[in-house]
Image (cartoon, rainbow, N blue to C red; front, side, top):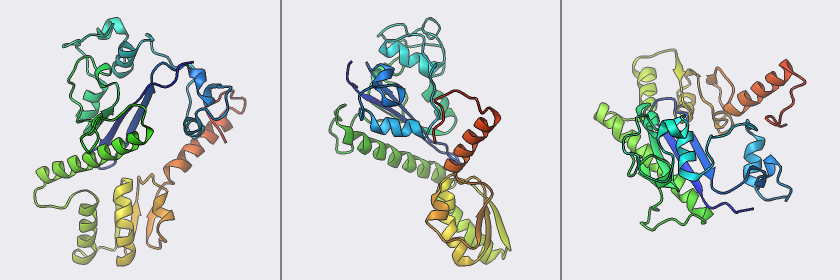
Length: 273
């Protein structure tokens, strides 16, 4: 069994009001049964991946149509088999004729970053990632076997994504506060200047976490909508702030239980608990 050679990080931080962040982790030269959640017989080999799998939906029959490195990644990121996406080997394809996943995410307003296997993840180089995280914030090159460096890279990428959001909002609304600060400023204006009796409709975890303590201090009835974080109610004692749906974790568990209720004989390793 070969050991994991690297981990590829592809993460996106949305530049829209209600972000859904995406993290894709891939590994090289590792069979599926090297992971505990997929049948590894050596206990404790992959405890973190196993814990993630235990909280997630797992796929037992999801495959790409080619098994080697660069072609396999471009199958996954294009949705096309190799002789249609033109990346059939380890060479540059300058005009592939299809949008890469990074292109689609950027068109949707996302900030995109990558760590590891950069030259094998797109049909040609350099590609239009917003940031290449192979270089650490201190200017040194990250080693692919240094686990701690992946946390550093991820934090750095998120920081850059948030800065890009601020820059974008300042370009579109010069002189105005942006992000959660903007929502807090608008909440104060509505309550103190407009004298509203209630405020309805906030979305995104960041906005909700920012406005909740302010709404409580102002004693204004505030109804938030899409706030997936559990911290909204765990970090604050709320009297005036309510939300119309539960947190993301509870919603996911409810969906799993509902599926099992519809089909009690469901035979799958997709759900745990």
